[in-house]
Image 1 (cartoon, rainbow, N blue to C red):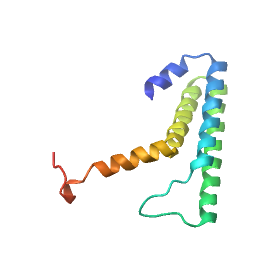
Image 2: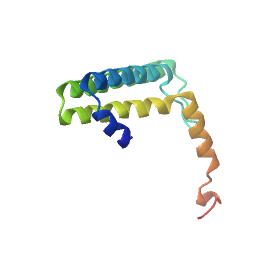
Image 3: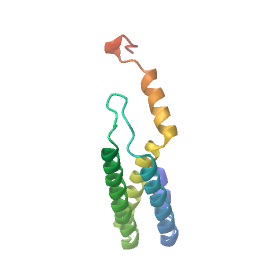
Length: 121
């Protein structure tokens, strides 16, 4: 992520802004489609609660995207802060995708903690 962010800072401002806007839009779309993700131990069965969490997630992602783009317009050190916000939104949105949820569940199921009799190395 640091290498990607450093490379993005070397781009011309219009290209950086276009990329940040596109990533922010895709991230907000992903959050509106897949948030919130259920936890196996605590399912969200209430439709009103799920809708409220989704609205809050979209509102927060939109606010952070606006801050990210404002940092890009301001330039200087603010541009690097805007890039960090943009990558943060992207990382969070990517973790909500069905493929990432499946991967996380597989990785969590593969490792057995030592206190449950798993590998102690």
